[in-house]
Image 1: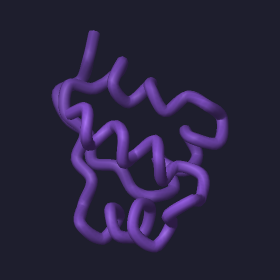
Image 2 (image 1 turned 45 degrees about the vertical axis):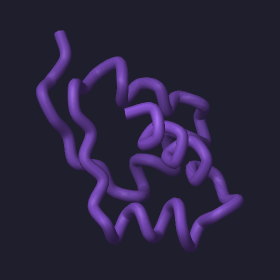
Image 3 (image 1 turned 90 degrees about the vertical axis):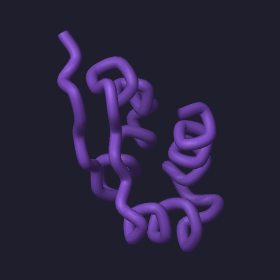
Image 4 (image 1 turned 90 degrees about the horizontal axis):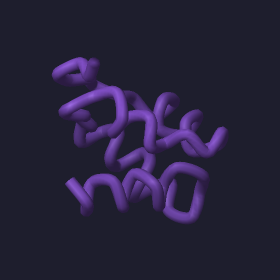
Length: 62
């Protein structure tokens, strides 16, 4: 059973990407919220780092 929503921080996103389990977020939760600060840290400032592309793709895919 999926939980309704979750708010994630950068550690969660990066950690899941490192162990190649980023898709767990989509499997376990109906909605995943990423704050603007986390977006900036992981996607903007972290461009090219682990988790950056995974998070960017997940946002694009909805």
